[in-house]
Image (tube, rainbow, N blue to C red; front, side, top):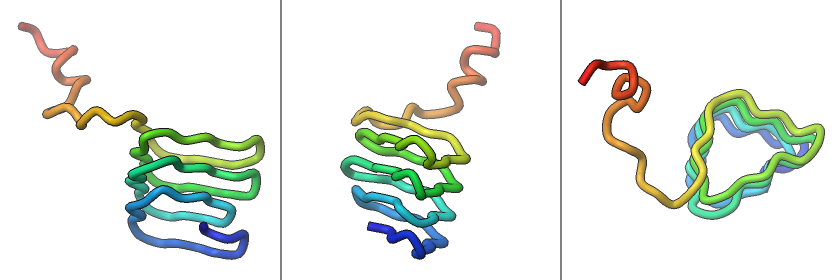
Length: 81
């Protein structure tokens, strides 16, 4: 758990509850819970996650157990065949 006055600057690799602030990417092997006072600035990859009303998140997210696709999906869609 990242407490209300806690700050993490770096990557997190676990399931966790954020009540303070995380500045960095989160790769949660389990569930990520951003509580009302929690703030995350960075990208999230988690099996599942929830943001409580009042919690903030600035970044991109990926949820699920599937491996990340190779290459950039936007480029694959935008490029002619």
